[in-house]
Image (cartoon, rainbow over all chains, first blue to last red; front, side, top):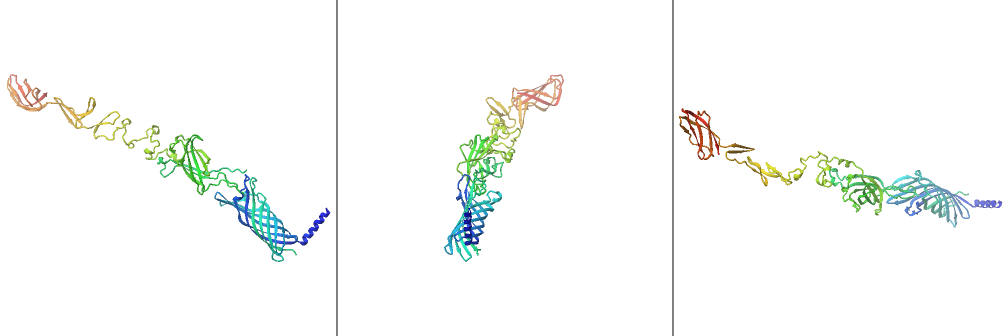
Length: 206
Length: 342
């Protein structure tokens, strides 16, 4: 047991001694929609069409020399979808406050380095409306949907060094909600999104 | 599993066919019943969050089937189908009675239904996809509406021949003492129903009964004419004929029957000596002839003298006075009255 503790301490010292810390800001353009199964377990994903929306946030980035990458972020993410049924338009507009934590690997080439990140996120619904044929309903007040959401976000991208302490990253996002948004457990709906994120990192390491 | 209830109707309006302003006075046009309703998606749809329920069927083609039954689910007296389009609010308006009548209908006209029974139910079914698969919407008894009450008081001139349902007003339809026929009857009223059976009558004519045939007229009578029976035929108009010694005088509205031959006149007789006679000159009396009996009298004391009169020639008489007494009798001028018996 003592050996294990010593080993962890050794690697810990190594990590700190070779790591680089950064503050990040990011903004993303998203296309979001829902996955939905009705009470008969019928998939009705194709009935929903995506909407263009966005997210933005700040974070902390921690790079190790061995290519491992850790990111911690707080963001506001907009979600929702549209539905046309029987010549009537229905739409949803959701806004989540979203802490997320990700791990990835950056393959350092030169100034341009590709990477792959996997985030886990937890979203908290701060605004939500459902529009039925131009009639707005507050989903939070009507308690039709859960206020919490969680899932994964897969983000391959490239990191571009602009300066000794500044770099930018462009990444593709695939958000996969794992939580059932419905309070009614007979139905199952979840968030999904595709997006493109542009971020900036400011190194704070000495 | 989330159950979605069926809501087909938000509102339903029923009222008897108010096709124009002349409502109660156009009974024959009341061959329809307005029906207005909002069609709503019977199934709804499960979606994310708040599900779609009770959504009106906007601008959709739907099928509607109306059935009028005797009692709840009783014999079908009327059944028809409609295909119609809802408007942008899901509203549709139909006239029951203007649809495609099905062979299940017991009657061929809506008006033929015995509404007097007042036990009809209206069953409404809708095919939301117009695929002839109908789902029951409502099945309710017909109730009176204000305009139906209004028919208790028939408007002036509202009833005309072709507006009466079976073209016949039956005795039980009419309360006692309610009909004034002064100006309400046209055409010829038969004798058996109290009429004359004829369209016109001769002025100032006399009418005779003739069984069930129209009353017979004797025509216009002249002075003194009266209906006189004749064996084997109807009465005829004729005058009373004067027999011998009778004078009949016909006037307007009167007949005078009198004995004939009486006449009065003055005559100068003078003095008749004893054993002498007086013979008058010929006196003209029209109508007398030989063989007639002439009776004469004087308006004075004859003092025992005899008076006689006789026909001396056609239309002529003479008066003779004989004095059988022993002294002369002076008559002077006296009035003589004669009576002729023919």
